[in-house]
Image 1 (tube, rainbow over the protein chains, first blue to last red):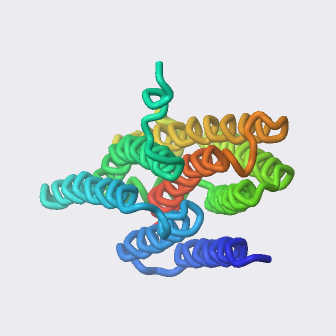
Image 2: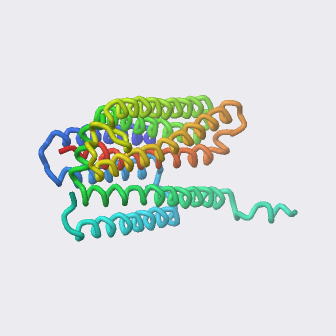
Image 3: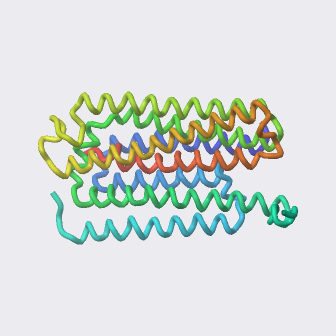
Length: 92
Length: 209
């Protein structure tokens, strides 16, 4: 097994481990922190897929710039709309 | 038309960079499409956490988990097919792409089965025992269907691309390693479909009380 193949297989094993961890957390009473924890794990999984399978680690700077800008805009979109929802008072 | 006009790139490396850059710009537009759906889901979860929990309780955690594992495995197989293409292994490339397409198909079949289970439980935006006439719950269910159907459409497009590319590589219409970039670009689309699901899974299935 050459180095590139091994790296992909190790990433896949890590992804499966993280999936098991996320599902396990469903049975732990974490309250509102569960969403934050499961989204943080999803972000780690997405980074692993992007870095290893999509080869972002070796991608040109222009590609990394596109990815960074997209991530930033996404955070603005979701962050500000969630903030708006949070400060409008309690929901049903 | 001169050869220079037909080939605007300085060299083959620059052309590959342009191909990859163009694909990432397209993927960015796809991310923003799903970004709107994630924003709506987040807004609804913050405003009505009880509704999200009520719906998640009725969703099949195990089918959702199985589908996540299926997509992650298909991503690995596509990544390996790309490596095989760069090394000039036509058969391994074809086999990898076929396996990934089959896993994508398995995802759609599992999701279809899950929709049947959801429907049997009355988990539809129109009403049923799971909703009990609660508008925020109905809204969350509508968002569940909109986001998962939008994702399933992307999976279907991905499966078609993977199967088409596998056929073209198998018949020698796409030569490897010369056109390994084509397999890489198809793979990039497939990995994005995987990443979108990685976030849909906690947003929808893990909102349990």
